[in-house]
Image 1 (cartoon, helix red, strand yellow):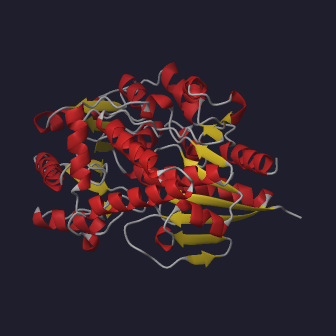
Image 2: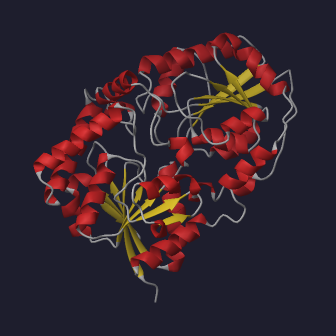
Image 3: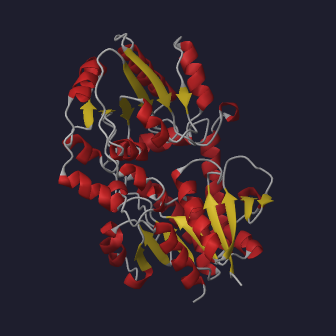
Length: 433
């Protein structure tokens, strides 16, 4: 008989919403289901309450049903906790509680150390500005237009801190230590030094070797570090291995604008986003041969706000959101994008040309951007004045795929990709230990 495994995942995204976090988890669990009788419990932490429910072998639990992570874990009794490596107060609360209750913690790293890194290159002033903008925002990153409320994000931040303090106290960590932890967390964010790893995890599942030396340095035992590859790219790599280059037609240029959720993550104000989109459309409209559509983030951005925005600008545009980006790409001659997003990696790996705006926001480039520039797949643009010139330049450029590019693709999307299978095997083996 297949063994029953109960796995708990804290997530701010519902599992049916397209997002890198949910796709990774769903890829792993579809493999795990063939190897064991697994029950997956998603603990959803959002600003609003919802009714906890069960769908087949998956449960959705609302975090608001509990005051702290210790009570929640005692109630659900999972065999393990499965988290991403990124630091947030809720994942940290669950890690502290799981340590206290001796429940094994598996942490999956979505990106290489070079992408996320140990620290940002923002100044204290920039970090403080970003933090206060997030705190005073009237919506969280998963909200719809009608969920807007005064200080909504700040109040949710306070709720998460209360949940953490309750958890620390339930884990027999005194209130003084708890407050020190929260103050330290604020100072770390202010200094731009975000950790992007979880030192409390028992097992670290890495996409590549880039994190190893750092994890060993902070005292993680090498035998608890596993290089599994990245389950996110698993279903996509076959497509990426086929190289095609389109011929450029001067008489009609069909563009796709791929947005980045900079507003939702506090890098932009609503005014800045409106101004950017407005300038972008005005610049593109100067050339009557250019037609364009827009693809917004599948979970973080709000389609309604874009519909309203284009209405104000008096422009009819097709807005894609839930569609798979990789299935849209073949319909367009060129992509225009900005910020830093996994979408950029997918576009470049599909050998689709892209004009990428440098917004001077100090964001790290997504994987393959550097190689894409070298191969003429990516053309950087610094201002709206040069946009039309850059579009033509990018379309005319001959693509020359370098060995660096091929090597980087092989690293990201190895042909024998079995990341989900490896992770499922590690879970079964370590839980049964």
